[in-house]
Each structure stands twice: as C-alpha cells, then as structure tokens.
Length: 338
Image 1 (cartoon, rainbow, N blue to C red):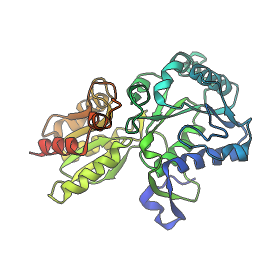
Image 2 (cartoon, helix red, strand yellow; image 1 turned 135 degrees about the vertical axis):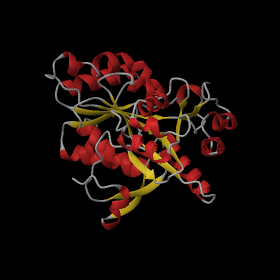
Image 3 (tube, rainbow, N blue to C red; image 1 turned 90 degrees about the vertical axis):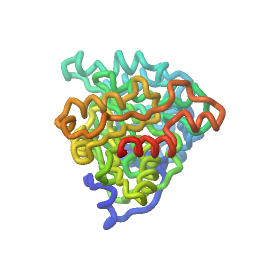
Image 4 (cartoon, helix red, strand yellow; image 1 turned 180 degrees about the vertical axis):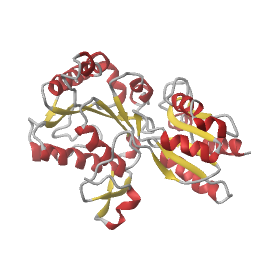
C-alpha cells in the first residue's frame, strides 16, 4: 500500500471527489476486503446517514452489514465495543459528535480501557465516526468541537482529517487499527472536493503534515480551519509574510516532530482551532513546543486562537463569528510577526 502524500499522487490515477465520497470509498473498500468490517448507526442504511455519507452502501452490502440502530448512542457505542472485542471491526456512525457524550461511559470506561485491563489479550478495533463543528446552523447541541475530551482518555486515538485525501487514507488506517479510534469529520467539509488517487493508499495514524511551507510564522491547525488558514496564508504571502501551515491530522497520538521542527524554523507559533479556547487541544500543543528544543528558538510567546467560550449560537452571524474567522487569524499572524 502506498502512503504517498497528496502532491505525490499526480502521476497516478487521481480524480476530484468530495470528502464524503472519500469516506464512503474507504468504508466500502475495507468492507469488500473483510466481512468483519461493518457499518452501524442511526439511519445509515436506506437514508444514507444524516449527511449522506453512506448513500448506496446498503444496496451493496445489505442490512446486516449496513445496520440501522435504535436512537441510542449508548447502545451504538456499547454494541460496537462488544462486537470489536469478539473479533469484528465495527464502524459506528454518531449523527452529531455532540451525542457521543451519551455513550461516554461505554467509550471511556470500556472501549478505551479493555485492552489495558486484559493485558493485551483483548483488542477493541472499532471506529467511532462523527460529524463535528459549527457552520450549518445546527445550534448549540449539534455544533460542538470536543476533540480535547477524547485526547484526554488513554486508550483512544483521535483523528481529524482536513481533506478528502486525508479522510480516505486515515480512515483506512483507523479501520485496521487494533484500538478504538474517534474519527471526527467537520461537517462543512463533506461537500469539499479534492484530489484522491484511484489506487490503494493509506496514511499512517500519527503523521503530521506540513500543508504549506513558509518561514515567517508557524500555524498549527486541523479540521476545517486548515483551509481557512491556507487562504490567509495565500493572502499574506502577497505582502511578503510566508506562513507555514502544519496539520497534525491525528491529535492522539500526536506526531509532534514536524510541529517542533517548524517552530524552530520560524520562531513564531500560532495554534488555531474551532473548539473553544479554554481547555482546547491547542494548549497541549503549546506545552509540547514549550517542553521541546524549539522553545529556545522562539522569538515571541506561543499564541492560541480558538472559539469564544460560549455555546455555538443558532444565529448565523453570531455562529460565524464565534470561531476563528479569516480576519481574526490574519490579525493574530500580523501581531506575531510585528
């Protein structure tokens, strides 16, 4: 299997597909390889999932392997955990990531701890897929970004792909992993198109990537904020400010090498995330940089830019301004490079 980066895929069969299509392809391809892999969740069958990610899959794989569940996240996560322990590889879709909270006991006290508690004699190879984040007018109970919760739990892996290429390659690795993986899909990315090779490839979990090279400031970001930061980078480049954009892609376990190397290179670091700033994962990344040799290369304090510490509003104007905007990111970068 190839783990080539997106820019290396030009010589292979590459077409433009959406983030949602890339996720569907990853699931379908892995289900064709093994009968142990199956999809479960609310309305994932005939309806095709809340965001249409699994459209058509029930026609190919049938209702036993694309399985509609009761409206109970506790049941979904608990059943996925039991299936995984007995040798299956379930992919459990939660309609909105906020609702993982209803299955937190099963996820945190069972799935995350079973392999450790049984001394490795039992594995829990399951993936919890969930749309996360704001931007669709779904209001406070359907728009949270809670990735920091999951990174705090030993035994869980946490993945946050920002492009169709990354979504497909990382999901394939998540399905193959012997540990429970929380796979967070920013819902505004589902219709975003990008190049994805037709050939088989995977992206290893815990593999940060420099999405754009620069020498003025390092911006570490993930999810839909990657594209927003890249847009800011293109704009500031015309003024001679070259941003280096680093996407962790997997938050836990974190591949901090490219982040530390970039911080050493530029001497200035901005961490941008859609989750609220207080207690956000940006604080962990800042601490990792401060604890590394990059600390001695910094020319300014590490800066964080997260969402305001409020529930996500329903009002579209307020919703758009709660998270880091183009203008807020630009201002933060300008402040760092002054």
